View 1: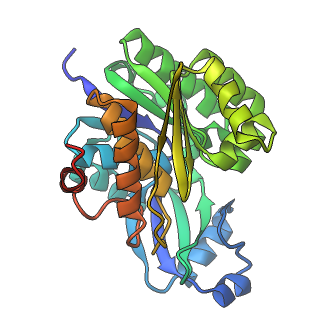
View 2: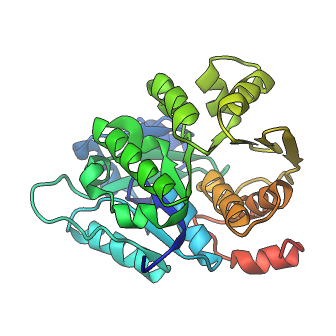
View 3: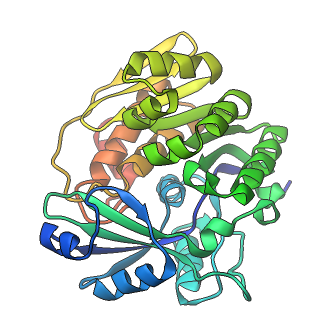
Length: 330
């Protein structure tokens, strides 16, 4: 085996296009504030044209996590699908520049355009995401490089990709390849609506295929259809080895067998909440991949999330290594 990867992600390869949008702009454009909405190609083009101060960056939830882990010096790869168009080439080049292997070359031919998410950031830091799934959502089993998945020590899957049957088959193939290579497989629940759409599948996945699961409190409550977070997390911990729950300003809760850890969070008013969960996962996975205890890994996640919400954009601006050193984590 030529290359061993510390962390490999699979998810929607989406170009994030970020711009400012106040409440009246959102209302005029018929955009629901603060949530992720899927849009069709025509609406995507309309919204893209309406963006004033565009900042483009390779994104997608798990891709952001992997970029964060890679920025900490671990070896990373991201499996995702882009079309051979301007945004797709931008995406592939951007991942490589940031030090993450992107084994899937942009695809020529009959494929929808590269996925993009138009993100409007309000003055209060709330983000309203309008995602056109495009090429990224067509990721299927044939796009899984079994050599890469099998060489992963930690594999991280994106719940959003579960929206199509092709994604389900890809997950299963990747998870099996990773496990066969001795790696750990986990998933991010992505979004409460995503959980609602795939509840039965997620239950089966978490129980049968996943070694760890990361979600926020809303996603865990949605998964177990309850408003009792303790009940939801103990059910999850009964079937999954490692369970992580983030809770915006409240402590992060991590459960592994009989071990229970709470990691306090410093409350900050976000400049842009985009990517907080993704970077929490980056810090946490970095901690796990480097053999830290649960508390230290959790604190790394919290520090990474706190960095990313202080500025516009879903990826760290300050080197996370410097941040961890400053807070005595490394």
